[in-house]
Length: 74
Image 1 (cartoon, helix red, strand yellow):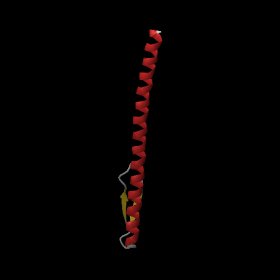
Image 2 (spheres, rainbow, N blue to C red):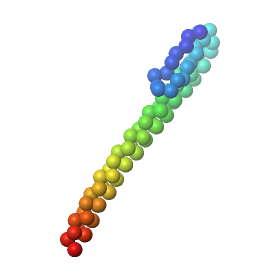
Image 3 (cartoon, one colour):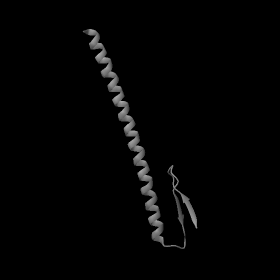
Image 4 (tube, one colour):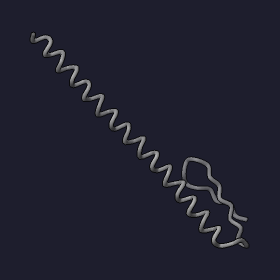
């Protein structure tokens, strides 16, 4: 029996039995690929949220500076 570890950060071990059904091998590989795709999507969503938060922080800073300047002008 051969044991393979997925390339993602989370531990997912796939055990392959060379005497077993070849369809099980395909199912395990497909399951592993789907798991890695889910992890990639989670990381992508997290990166997108960080970019959006940074953009809103910049906009809030700009609005605060503009409001302060207008208040001084009055």
